[in-house]
Amino acid sequence: MRIEEDIKLDYKDVLIRPKRSTLGSRKEVDITREFKFRWSGKVFKGVPVIAANMDGVGTMDMARAFIKDGNGLTVALHKHYTLDDLLNFYDKKTSAAVWYSIGMTPADEKKLDSFMKKKPGLVEKLCLDVANGYSEGFVDFVGRVRKKYPKLTIMAGNVVTGEMVEQLILAGVDVVKVGIGPGSVCTTRKMTGIGYPQLSAVIECADAAHGLGGLICADGGCTVPGDVAKAFGAGADFVMLGGMLAGHDQAEEKVTQGPDGKKYLAFYGMSSDTAMKRHKGGVAEYRASEGKTVKIPYRGDVTATLQDLLGGLRSTCTYVGARKLKELSKRTTFIRVTQQLNTVFGQE
Image 1 (cartoon, rainbow, N blue to C red):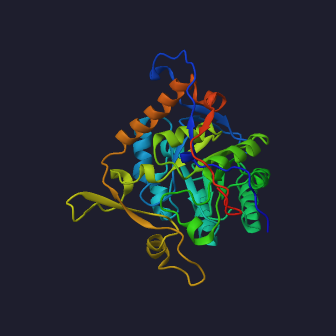
Image 2: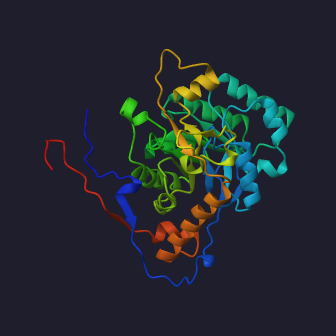
Image 3: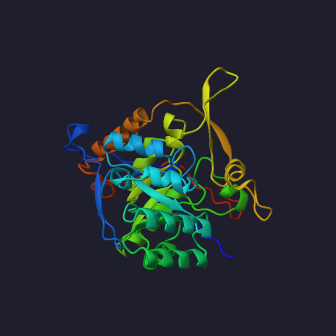
């Protein structure tokens, strides 16, 4: 056992210090990025925000809305669409806007293989998503998928430490997903005691990834547009959003009316009782639920939320003089606004 006493911070612990700027308007800010992925060799150009592969967020309707928006945002589809659903959905337009998501079960791999045989070349981006990216089996799985599909851009995770980011990149991952437990409907930290403050995780993991020519996606913990800006300021290449994009028409979920007369949609973690009952018939006897279910106020079409999100990001850039999103991390100075108590020996 050992104790690390270095300061570790979440988004709520900091603000971004304003700096002199020559920008006269938010219109002058370019919030798109262009990346060439290390392993696939393919190029991404667009706003590097990804809708999380969760029920109610990572939906085909969300992807259609993102395509219509025209900013180059992408959606990680949730893992529970049928093969027929996916075959009917994918075409040249949608393939650029979505990440095909799988876990590491034989059924997931078999479904991907079947899709690739029936529609070769349409899947461009693959999200390998597991709760614990530290297992040796997951690294082996990543290597096998990379060998089988060398032209795919692969995003995989989740992890929160630099050494594991490096291992996954060397195994064939283009984008490493960073985040354990920061999500609004994730209870992993409470159930297991495992986690890492998200801002510090992003800073440390970005440094590790960029040294190897890889990229990271900050996954979880953003509740307002300012948090998204902080993630990019900390060095994230992509930011994945769940709760911020929940509750919209694109959720593909039933809208219900609460006792207060207002409309709501259910939103839940993918390791929650709700998700496991829906997709697996219940919680397996060897595990516990690591997610919760909440009611999100109905928010209508996602277009207005995207406008707020992207507008907030542009505004951040004007405050620090970043003409392009690429410059934001170089122009960011974080100011710590919370105090960390020294509780190791009961001292404050």
